[in-house]
Length: 497
Image 1 (cartoon, rainbow, N blue to C red):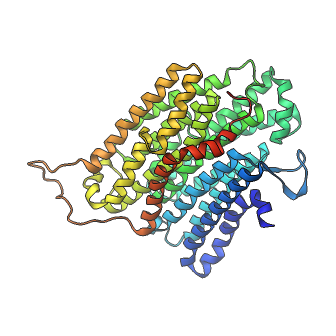
Image 2: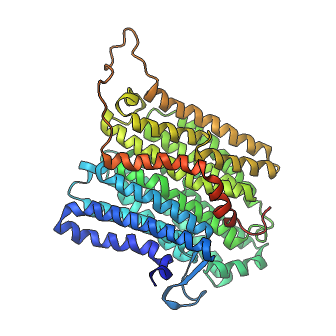
Image 3: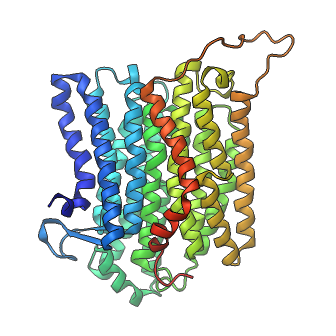
């Protein structure tokens, strides 16, 4: 039965579509985008079916080629991986739909290679999520990175230089991760996550284990843009084509964050291993620093894309802080924020691309009269901005609420204060966006452009996914209780308070 093969189908479907695009594009170029968008939609449906099956039957283990672990590669779908797959594939499918009109002239004549790389990226991210093998995770991680490098480099101007910096730092991150995996293999003789989890507690006081974990955490920290390892992120998000940023920014760093949580809780078992190293405390404080530093840097920006890039650094800090607190409410908040940040950052970058196409540029000053010319786009920006700040009933409020509860229950009042300060910083930098988009008035003596007389919304291909994300942000907030009680409370490791 087809549904018995859900774990491999999640990465295989977009991968097969990526391989089909070049011959299809050679015959009929107009079919490339519909095929890519259809493959993205099919993958999202498969992810929903996988989550439904996990909820009904429990964890799904799939042995590739029939080889039993630890000798063979195992794919695993549990509550956390299925939930993350839904978040990544859902936002990825909307980004692929958006990319058709958003890419426009930038990829004309290269549609097959562009959408092939986009699908390869989606397939690799889903492979990272479903794999139960550390080296297999590295392979998917690098394929995703190579796809991202190439997509960023498709832009003009400073995009190739941004891609080069991305390559250099991404290679450092991948090398550190691989060194960590090599150390673990030398110590245990296995790469299967479940097998490693059984063997590592006996090595809890090993310095080699501490070094290996340090390599893994720093390597994944670079991949997820954790401050101060974020050097590749601002330029990549700023100078890549809008269609590329709309795909990479919402989902690429979330898969790396998932990988970090999976390794720490499913492989290392932070309450059993590394008893001599305050790893989780260091992570929680690293997340707190990222929240504040990213927010302050975002406030200083006058380019909308760069502002959103630094806000991503800040928002990823919430996820890392929740992982570092390592109690049940904090982890629920971190996992819920993976979904919320994917949706609100996708919504904001979709809107940024639409506004740049209609209003003339990416600078905040170019948003003048946006509320009159693009009222639906502006409404989506307002919803996403409120979610970034943490205003109910948007989804961002509830993920930050769980993080706040986790900080209080964990006896960390300073970290609780940082979460609140992060919301205030988000209010400042998002108000700067809304001020230019909504509050500009034509003053006496103002010789700037007159108020527009008509509306100029983005094309339906760009507006529909934007509206879908705006409504999704509200839906996750309103129905957060079923998501938490039905899925995420099972995603936290057993034994956490």
